[in-house]
Length: 342
Image: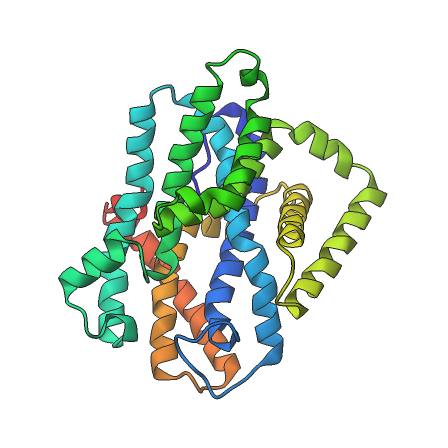
């Protein structure tokens, strides 16, 4: 959910990236809206079992977060070239991600959870919640994404700056970057010090580096997808594997990586590069929608968990989604944009 650069090299891709971001946030909001029907989620219970929504949630879980990280990595290709001062880069990302993490977490997520008597916070003091939940990044819902992405930016910038100072290696830095990211995906937990944001960073940096890699070699990807027969084959394989994963909980790690990678490739290449008012409005507010939507669905789950599923979806997806969208716009108008990292 990084902002688009002003660099002229990205302007031709800005509409496509914006549309990808809109697709990702729609999937995330939809996933949050129906999570109560997921067999793998047990924070709140419902008497309504909807098998279709359970399987649909499994499909949704495969794509949006890896896609968000890939988009950030794709845009990082430009911002890395623009920044030459690591301190300035770190401060910028701290303002963009960590400041919203604490602002939204403490003044929005926490009050809502206390108001609805969220079980995980019931017997804790505000001090305990701040220390054991926010500083340790434990049980803070969707906000895990912010410190994890922050660490990914820092790790990525350090790796690339180091590689670019070494002759020969600098010419293939993006290949080495995605190789190191893949290694971290498999063994990074050993050096994560059991700190959740670092563990998540090592789990998702592979998609961040994949986005970076796709930007560097976008000409090759465009050439591959230019052949319609290859395009059709890849899309059909993608759809079959997505359905297979939704029906099999014990899908192998390598297969999961392949499906996510293929989904991201297909979406990047197939997403139309045009703009419309609706997508533009949603696109410029995706970060705020992500920040403000998820805590609201807990109000629904705490008060009407057994309502008709269609009512739950209408309230969670459309009503809470609209409120999250409007909250983002109001914050801008009040000149409190630091809350949403701007």
